[in-house]
Image 1 (spheres, one colour):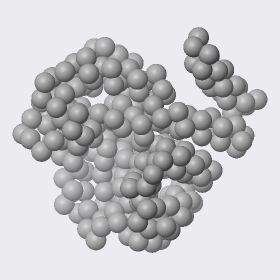
Image 2 (tube, one colour; image 1 turned 135 degrees about the horizontal axis):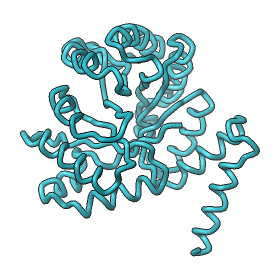
Image 3 (tube, one colour; image 1 turned 90 degrees about the vertical axis):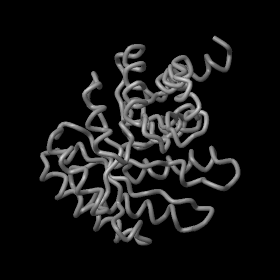
Image 4 (tube, one colour; image 1 turned 60 degrees about the vertical axis):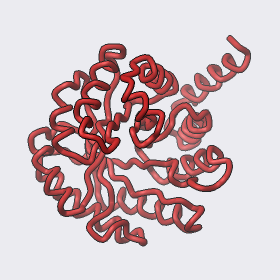
Length: 271
């Protein structure tokens, strides 16, 4: 499973303020904690509505790469120009592009980037000019169209991560069921691609969000989820991930689960 650490996002006030200060120690601590808790990629979003987005994103890439040369990035921007310029500063591959959708104007703008960089991994959102379909069938149909379009740029199917768009269950009690149906439908009708989601959306607006996120991840893993964009520091996420993989026969002799259990026991005992 691919874990994308979501915390460095300029829509969050502390991130905006740290970017203004160019607070290197703040960001390196954020990255260190996310790597330590299992993030495979670090999502970096500098889109705070200012004209400094490219400058700030490049600065983040440079300071993080210098301190953690092993880190892999998810470049998170609505602007293909920002991503194109920032890609030149990435030293470790693969790199993930977050994100593309079937919205006609945005899709048209993003396709040249993919043609120039067919080696990237792409997060593809199942939405179009009409927004996010209410039904799983509508989202699956978008995924089928998007797959053909993206593959035509040279990107390999296994490097496409479809996001079926998790919605809050606090406003729609059937929202996560619709997401799971979308997930299984994409796996069935778009062979070769992978799936990802921004999981924490499921619990927006309701109490004890971490509990909801943990069980949502367990259900999504059973349905075939390949990646998740999440706060990897949440212990429930690791607990669900290692437990479910063992139960689904994806962890030979439960070795990863045992390693995780021992690490948690040592942490609890203060070792």
